[in-house]
Length: 99
View 1: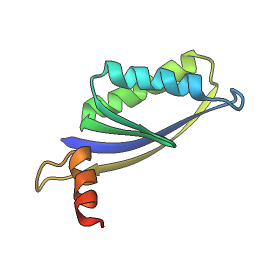
View 2: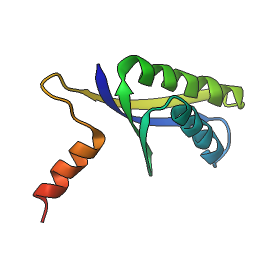
View 3: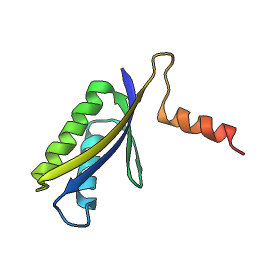
View 4: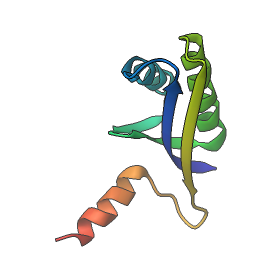
């Protein structure tokens, strides 16, 4: 099943700057070959359900390996069965309807 996920992974107990941990997670997602779109407070991910969640698990593993004792993650997930729809399709749909 194809899904689109909005992932926000926040390492805790590592200080104020978390960008090195986010970079490591992005690398994991890229290595998984998933379609990604980084944004200011997370990452949109597009792919097969099992592949996406395996990559999210690897993100957690990598960030813990880097020394983060705790991680809080928020996931929003969408799927469709009526037709295929990509992240780009969703954005274009909104843009085509805006002034």
